[in-house]
Each structure stands twice: as structure tokens, then as C-alpha cells.
Length: 441
Image (cartoon, rainbow, N blue to C red; front, side):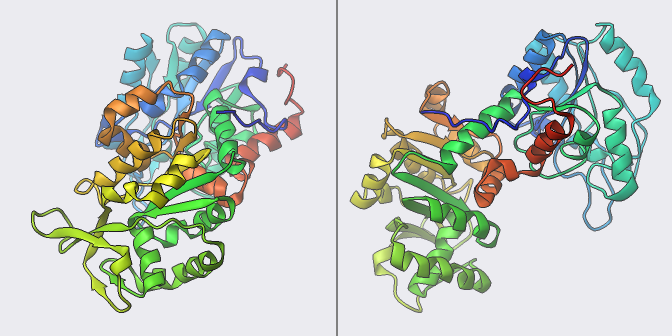
């Protein structure tokens, strides 16, 4: 697997002079659900950046978002333990044998209004070496993180006032919020080691060795139209799964599958028309149809795509039959690929998982291909269904697991990782301050 290169305009953390500097670091440690860490993978992937900052004499102030604590209807922000950073801090302290302070700020229905001066004693302790780091409360607890106008501007200024340097290592957080975007207007700003690594591997998806095969699935067709169209233009072969595949089948064969919306079928006809000429889509030939939205004995069976009839009404299609991956056409495409990108869960989890397991083991049989997996559900499914395989390939240079599936799809849709707004903000910062390519003085 040969890594892609980085644009010279991107300022890198290794170009910054960190000794005795307070460094504000934005991570994507969004791994807490109901107060418990579900999987520390995204935390572990940022330890290199954290270690580098400390080794260079920097003093880290860390931050991340956790979940979606803001009620979209009322605007109220819940600041309870279910979306707190304390489990992350406990994990880091245990992993690194360090002392990390979590400052507390008054919060109301609108969240935390401001970073008040009570944080100053923590910063003094940090500079004096009495603690090893500070971890701010969930960034989405602050009223200014996702707001607009003066509230947002004030929060960005408050964040900048805490530190000397800003480092973005939050590849999975592509939205331009105050802590990922606005703060770059006020501090010398750099890309962390994880962000750099993710972008190098993303170049391998955008400029792949060929044949290039993508496997894409999703729960809703309309949310994937943009990236799906972009992926289709780039691939040699495309394999679909989940509701996206169901929608495609409805549009192509004129069948009705339970749970597939008519407007999505209409949107999918454009893909069907394009593929009638290009022939890039490799159909998985065997489906698992169910009478109910779940797994009940005797209520699901295998259906062949070749047997579908115009006007046929079907129940829920909840998985791909594993035998589909033994089909000569499917096996040949996956077995001969030079690059395979996977952002897909084949079945309706947690009830139907056989299709995803068969997909992952079939891909693994191709020992020569670069295999790049999107984050989120794709990675979690791989780890849950094939734990032995996952552990065996963690250090395999042919595999790469992205920490942010949404960021990957957004970059694919834009056909460049440098169009992600937090990344573009780093480049703009370097241009304004002329500090890329040389250590910051």
C-alpha cells in the first residue's frame, strides 16, 4: 500500500515550535454513549499526536464533541453525564498514567454560556507541570459551538485565549464549528498526525491503483446521492448493499420492497440509466427477504435477483445471502481488485449479519489489494463480526481503517480532502501567517 502525498500548503504539527507552549488540540473522541466508552479506537489513534506535543515540550488543552446534546426543536442543551468527557479522561489517565483536569463551568438550558476565569488556575498548574493536561467539557455543551453571530465569535475568541497554538487532529469532525473552524482565525494552526495520516490514505481512494472497487451501503438512499455519484464516476466496479441496494433494485427491476420510499426510487433511476451504459455495478445475486422487520425463525428466506418480476411486491430485504460472494462475477471483481474501499454494512443490524461477515472474509482473501474501510458502523461491524480477522490485520499494511466515515464520503463527494472546511481553514491560516513549511517562531 503506497501512501498518497500531502499538499505542501497544509501546515503540519511537526513544523510548529511547541516547547513551553500551551497547545489547544481538537480531537474526535466522540466514543461515549450513555456515559460509557463504546470503543476506544478513535482515542488510541490520536495518542501519537498527544505524545508528540508533550515530547516537544508542549502543554495540551484537549477538546472533543460527544453526541448530540442539543434538542433541535427546543434548542435546549443537555449537559448531563451521558455526553460528558469524563470517561475519555479516565481512559487517557489510565492509558498514559497522567493527570488531566476537567474544568467545570455553570450551565443552563442553553448550555455553557462562556469559558470563565476559573480555568486560569488549571492553566497555571498546566504550565507549572502540576498536571499533565486539561480536557475541556464537551464542545457541544457550549452555546457558541454550533451557534452563529456574536455568541459563536465570542466562544472562538475564548478558546483561542487559552493557548498559544491550535492543532486539529479531528478528521471525523468535518463540520465547520467554532472549535474546528473559527478558532483558526486567531491562533497559528496545524494538522495533527492522525489528520495527516487520514488524508494521505484518503488520497488512495481519490487516486486509486486500479482496478478500483467500492462497496457502499446505507440506511437511506437520499443521504448518499452526492458521494455515490462521485464514487460511481471514479470506480471500475461498484457493489451496493443495504437500503441503497434495495432502492437500486426497485428502480431497475420495477419491484416494490418494503421500507423503500418512492422518492428514493425515482432518484435511483438516474444511477440505473448511467449504469445501463457503463456497466460498473456488480449485482449481488441472492437476497434475504423477511416478512417482519427483525429476525424470526421461519419468517425469512433467500430470493434470487434473477427471479425478480416487474410489479412484484416484496417484504423487507434485510441482508445479502453469503452465497452471493461465491458467485463467479462477484468473486472475480473482489479478487482481482488493486484497491477496495468499503463503506458498507450489508444487513439490518444486529439481526442480520451474515452478509457483512461474508463480504469481509471475501475481501481478505485478496492479499494484494489495498483495503480501506470507512469509519463508524462499517468499522464497528467489522470488529464485531470478525474479531479474529480484525486483530490479525490491525498491523497489516494492506488494511486501513478511517476514523470518520462521514468525512471520507464528504471528501469523495468534493473530490478532494482539502475541500473539507476545517482543513481549508488550516491552509488559510498558514497563508495568512506564512508559517507553513517552517517552524513557527
